[in-house]
Image (cartoon, rainbow, N blue to C red; front, side, top):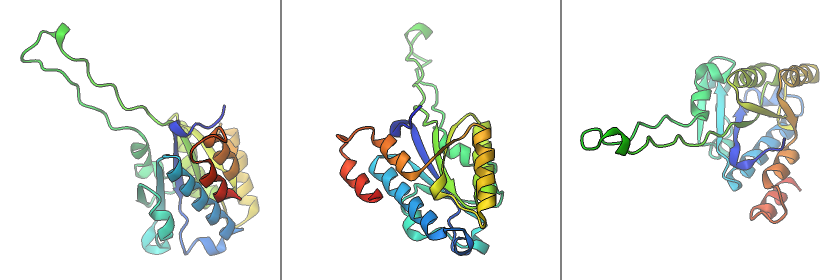
Length: 201
């Protein structure tokens, strides 16, 4: 199965200033997160951010925050425990129809719910803590989870790689920033191709 931009959402977990300096290859991890967020904007993929205990660890970089629709402040390591899954699901629509004036068989059907974007492309830090716990809980909530490995980091490679092993075993797809880019595009004829290609060159 390939990623589909029209069925995707992007979640960027905890790229905070007091955390990133100790992350293995932290500058590359953050650069790839920014690439993902810029690609998401070009491809009209909703992007969401999270921040772990921002009073202590600081806010995500402003350039990342502005590319996200909203940023969730959280205390749990899993963002799902603080409400992320509610952001990723469309709001329920009220039933339609006019019960006062028409018999039931002539009333309008309730509006169909907005289509759910069930492919969650996720990246973040630390890979073996907040990123992994969030991804595992999204899998439990029946989202399809795609972990962008080159935009994830931990303080040590061992912890990062252990997280990837566990996530793959739980059913997450492991991808890279370029894989996401070309799968979201689908074709070199895509109107955003030049701009997206420029981001990954």
